[in-house]
Image (cartoon, rainbow, N blue to C red; front, side):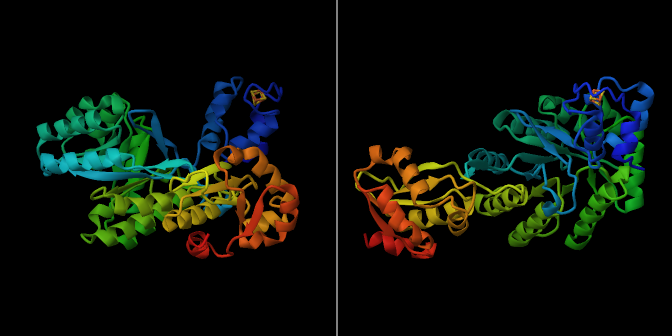
Length: 445
Ligand code: SF4
């Protein structure tokens, strides 16, 4: 049973020494109770109290680290059912499936696609992170395939085999990558539990039925394993989706420890229809997959999932913003038109997309409005004549372009008079209200 902040506070030293990074023991206790701090941050808790508080201080869903070549990715560690309650923290890893039944050419093509696949959005690089490497009954080929993935990519690796010896050999071959082992079942829990413990690797626990899975994770944690990932075994959308919700709710609400781990999901095993597979994957990105395994990684299939993941795992309490500055689109020169808008990411996406689509070389000025859209920023006094004028003078566009016509958003037409006073050398042109009219507007200039 979870302890309240006050109950935890009563057991702390109450010296307010601040060494934990919090100003008082009470603040630390509150953070501990809500899973935002780790007990180990306080060096002065006695062993006896430490044991008592272990239950209360552990996060409801354990963050599990899985290695990529450069650094680690974390899955799990979530604190809420719905992102609007707070935020989701650790995006699910998107994985491609490689099997020992695939030809060398198929494997090489998938690794090549993985290495090339990255998309820039709002200043972030979006890409898949993982390969699930599956043994189809050839242990030597399995280890070689795992090694090839490690050598030729920076991907995180999940090793999948029914054969404990094959799993061990493959894990040895890529142990620096800290692979995730798949999967301990009721039948092999002792062997795989021992292997994961010996090598210090995270392990998937797989069982169908909630009682069976809870029993399995309890057994594995009893063996001393902490980094577990859940597979409820279902391969239908309905049951697998229900499992995700049950695991999350059980872990958060009654803090049911046997389900307090991230999950792995397999859209690739639920359908042969490529479109359905992506829709299933999208379901698990929303609720509540820790890893989502796809049958193949192709840009047109992965891209929408990456965008969806970006949106779901963006903090809803902080507006998405882009960096203010000058964005050249379609290779503008000194005579190209100059547009300006706000740094609300959605505004930037839409406006820059329309300008790009118009193929008209254009300078796009993005002004810092703390992530507010044009209308809201204008109403809040952040996108008004003097502020916009000041930004245009300071941003450096005058050094890049001779053109002195500034196109402002149609929704900000009211600032044109003030802006003309602020920028006497400039001609202020009122652009369209709707972004979809931008291409025709630019072509007419
Ligand atoms: Fe209190 Fe421990 Fe934090 Fe010091 S380190 S303020 S004793 S909780």
